[in-house]
Length: 64
Image 1 (spheres, rainbow, N blue to C red):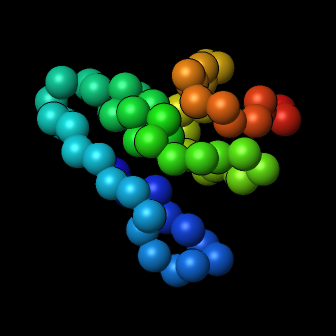
Image 2 (tube, one colour):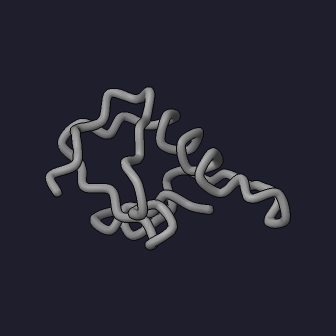
């Protein structure tokens, strides 16, 4: 998976996971923990919207 910067037009971080192990959520958490997210909007697919997505990073709390 990739963390893409729309304003820069490039992927700024990437992470891999085994697709058969169901570890996509953990892989996204690890990816987001590697970058500074203060003041940024993070979008993810529906898999990550079916329950609150806690993170150990200093990211801003969801607005909805």
